Amino acid sequence: MLDRHALAAGMMIEKATYGTALTLMLGWLLWIGKPVLLPVIAAMISVYVLSTAAAAMQSLPVLGRFPGWARRTVILIAFALGMGLLFLLVINNLSQVAAALPRYESNLDALVTRSANLLGIEDEPTWANVRRMTLDRIDVTSWVTPALLSLRGFGVTLFLVVLYSSFFMAERGSMARKVVIAMGGEEAGSRALLLLSRVNERIGRYLFVKTAVNAILGALCFGIMLVLGIEFALFWAVLIAFLNYIPYIGSIVGVIFPVLLSLAQFGTLLMASVVLVTLTAAQTFVAAYLEPRMMGRAFNLSPFVVLLALAFWSTLWGLPGALLAVPMTASLVLVLSEIGTTRPVAVMLSASGKV
Image (cartoon, rainbow, N blue to C red):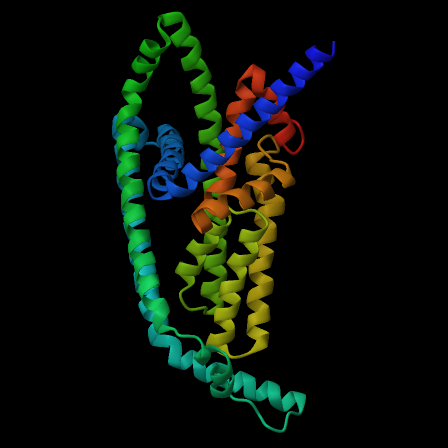
């Protein structure tokens, strides 16, 4: 009896050891393979959104008459143009921010002086004094080269995402035939294709609706900032839309940047407060009212799972990992929910148990 228990304990320890080693190995491969895996995964997520958008085009009066390959081509061309415009938007706004820095410094100088008068400080601080004690102590020139390299890497990543998406879209037509061959017969292949169809449909619908919600949020924030006269409104709106893929943290970070810019642009706390209140109201409306009605509660993840996914992927891949963490985790839950043996795992990862 003791030998049997000892053997079982030894097997459990062995499995735990192998599992830990496999987890560490996969983590190391994900970390070291970031330059290759990041654009591939981003392209796969983009293909789900693009394919769902191409299918949704069937309801349009004119474009709905196009064959499937033509609709996918139109969507892919629009996606490539959008990525190119995004890169140009980033480049253009960086140059405009550099040109507006002297004006921002004078506004901040006036704000610091007024604040010092209100506080009754005799030696009124100026922005030059504050900057001398803070920013001037930082070697900005040492940041220029890494920033330019990051910008170049951003452009290369966008190009690879478009390139990989094109190949993924082109191979969708032959995927069914290859699955049947790989499964070894029509019957097994049909079952596998049915499972893949359900998974692809649910993942595509989730990612498409989430992207639509983010686009609506970006449009609302763009309108608000345009009315308030915030500079670079389009850039901040696009940034807010992207950051909304990151739950909890993304919405907060997305609001902070325009608020800080309004503080530097207008030099008044009142205007910064107005920007903060209006953008927060837009975020609250989308998160509390619009998103639950468009997406439902079926694809919600447990808050703990969301935080764990954010911590894991942001540690591995930084900001891109944080942006992709929830779409990848939600897609994984949908895949697990379609497989009988792994469905309990999907239930435990969900927020309400409905998968």
